[in-house]
Image 1: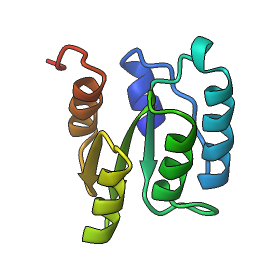
Image 2 (image 1 turned 90 degrees about the horizontal axis):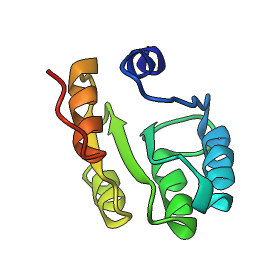
Image 3 (image 1 turned 120 degrees about the vertical axis):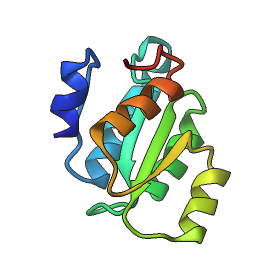
Image 4 (image 1 turned 180 degrees about the vertical axis):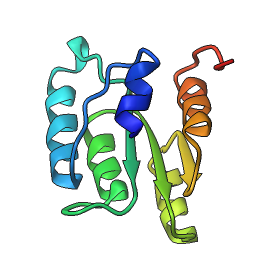
Length: 115
């Protein structure tokens, strides 16, 4: 649903089905950092095979440039603190609307706000 929504608004989206796949995609983009068009990672905190914060930590070890938006349905101060210390760009509480996500994505990427 998120992939289709953002694609319909002109974003190029690559989808990972779990944390391990996300880490592979991010690692590949980090290796090609100069030519990479990966500018934003969207991730749930809880995923199979790797958490969103673990993926963020590995991402930060290889790239400071890529921005990250995390979300969670579980209020956990420690997770938010860890994400903040790793430089998360935004943190959303589930449930959130697709319009809210779109506004946050535009803000993080410094794009004009959606109408």
